[in-house]
Amino acid sequence: VHTNTVRFHLDTLLEGGRVERVHPGHHGPGRPPQLFRALRGMDPDGPRQYRILAGILTQGLAGEDNPTAKARDVGRAWGRSVPRPASASPTTALIGFLDEFGFAPESAAAGRIPLRHCPFLDLAKTHPAVVCSLHLGLMQGALEGWQVPLTVDRLETFVEPDLCLAHLTENGDRP
Image 1 (cartoon, rainbow, N blue to C red):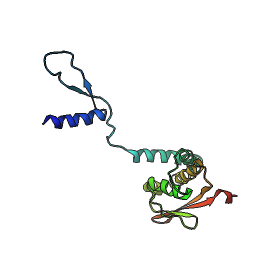
Image 2 (cartoon, rainbow, N blue to C red):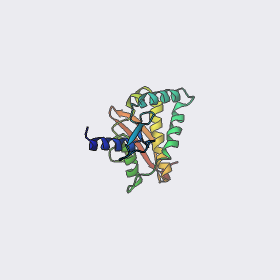
Image 3 (cartoon, rainbow, N blue to C red):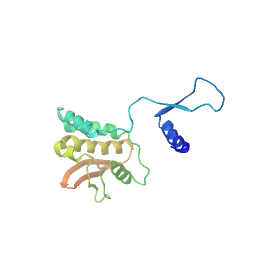
Image 4 (cartoon, rainbow, N blue to C red):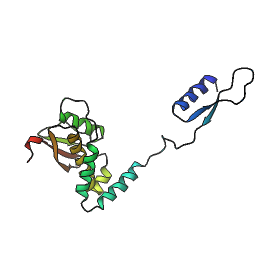
C-alpha cells in the first residue's frame, strides 16, 4: 500500500480515537519511525439494539399502576429539555420537532397536526396506552419548555391506519 494511503487511513483512525501514536524508545540515525497502537474499547459504530431497549422500557411502564399517566409524565419531563427549533411560530416549531423525531407531520389545520408516521409503530400497536401517552407527553413537555401559549390537549391515535391527530389549544383557552 502506498504511504499516502496509509497516512490517510491512520489520520482517520487517530481522529476517530481508534489508534494512538507511540513514540519509539530508541534514537538512531535517520528519521524516527512512526508507530501506532490500536486503542482498546467498544466500537462506537457497532450494532445497536434500541428496538429491544424500547420494548423493555415500554413493557416496564405498561406494568405500572397507571401506565398512561406515568408515560405522559415521563414524556413531558423529557420534552421540556428539548431546545426550541428556530421558527416563526410555536406551531411551526412543534411541526419541526415532530418531523425531526420521524412523525411525518403535515401542516396544521383547524387546530390539529396530522401525524402520518409513528416512529414506534410496532410498540404503539401492542402498548398504545404507553407509547401514545409518551408521545403526547413529549409534545406537551416541549411546548411547556419553550414557554409558548400553546398546548397539545390530546392525541387522537390511529384515526386512520396511517393517521394520528395532535389537537392544539391556545393556553388562554384552556379551562
